[in-house]
Length: 171
Image 1 (cartoon, rainbow, N blue to C red):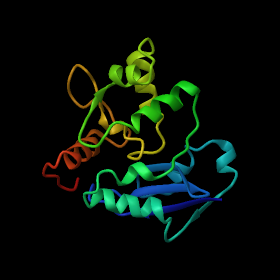
Image 2 (image 1 turned 180 degrees about the vertical axis):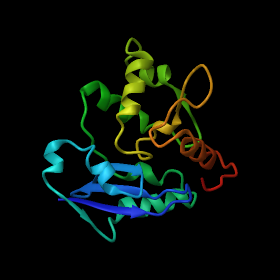
Image 3 (image 1 turned 135 degrees about the vertical axis):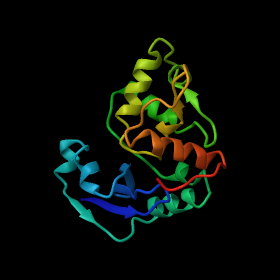
């Protein structure tokens, strides 16, 4: 069974957390956990979805992160599907510390895939099911600006400001 919980956030949207046996398999800024559930693999969807009151460590880490402990999300175990390349990019993405950003090309280079470059890194970010635990919001285009974000650029801007100690407001 996939267990889900909505955790209120100061972003203006709750964070839907979905776990399987204590491992986070999806997280996203939505008030409807089913929006994340339908993005899971068919095998995981076949297990069903149950809304619960408390997911434990994932919910605690979420609250701590939004309260200012910017490293709290790092300790939560995550698992998501993907090719070996995508999994490597997601793994390296988790190593990008709060308060810092990288370009798509730099992310690929850190993953040991400089030839893969920005396209594969951008695809890995676009397919990321576990935001902000796999912090794709910390990846910016090398040409400037914020680039895209699955949950909208204002959410990405909010997260980056939060991690940089800037003043942030609810969206």
